[in-house]
Length: 476
Image (cartoon, rainbow, N blue to C red; front, side, top):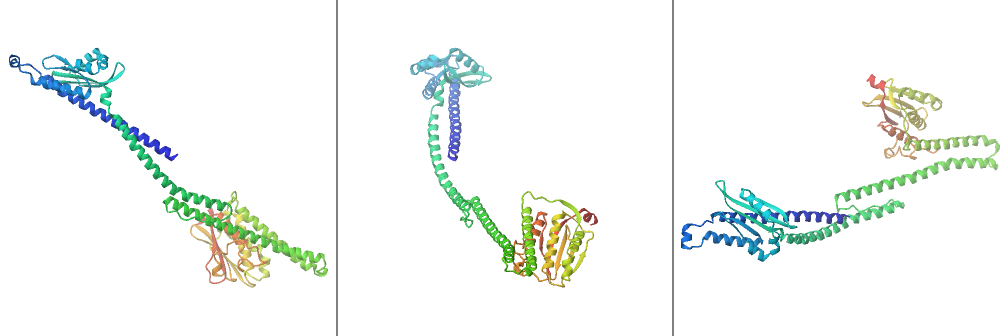
């Protein structure tokens, strides 16, 4: 396709060049004929006979030169020449022209010649291309004017092929040059295209291997062209992301399988033990309580997985409203009073902005608050403290949930929001699903906000931001 376009472009350029050179050639030949006609017209104006010439019988030198010049023009152009000299006489080379080309002379139209001559005698220069007996003919007429009088004139008619002849050589040259240029361009395009296609072919093969699940496939960065280098780099980046995604998927499946298997195994083991009598009837109550806890744990895991799945759906939406974040934190503490009392924990509130109105999805944010509060209760020792803080952080509201439990290790800080993270601070067997913080992060990202670990010298703090609500904005 590219070669076809290239050949068509070269052909179009060749035609344009040929037409331009042909027109220039014709213009040059006509200009040359016109100059010859002007010289003949001048000589014709000087062709007068003096008394001395007649008495002495001396040949008029002007007449001789005029005859030579007319013969020279006829030889070069094969033209019919009609001359009006200074004596007012008309002369022509009709006989000589008829001998050389009787068909051309016979085709001349006397009426057209008279009209053209009258135009020239009227002082006009003419240079036209007409059809004479079906054949194209050039007519050039030039007067010699002095003191507003026409003293001499010449009218020349010649076949168009005489003027246009020789332009075929241009066409041959253009064809030869164009063919050479096309061949050279084709070779250059072939080798250049080959250099471009090879990296693309390599990437196509690599893409095929990736489609078969070989996500460790990489391609060499192409240096053929900057665009291909960027494409190769983007391909490798995509392969890296897909490899990470596949590893994450496998890890997620493995973790889910493990988390589901653990409570199911416990439930089955205890139930079978009670059925076959391994566990005596008097201990059934204790083990039924354990089965109940494992069932709750299994239900919580499934609920968290469904929550995470709903958050990652493309059609997931937020029901944004304005509400008081301080009030939401108070309600969350009240709902967890039994757990707090059992561990004899204290809860401090530091509401630096009250009311603290935020613009968010209240149901989802309640899930965030509950998850963070439950996380603090689970991993804070008996008699510990929890502090809830809200404050104006410029363009957003900042909420902090702090506890004085065991701090998160530095090496775990970047992983604490990962799904099923297994560090004791984020997940301990029997204490949760390991999905709570991941759900919190996804909900806040869904709001266009963020959650992070706060810097603290004691315990651990989780800090998240929310958009300000209207009341907060007005108060500000």
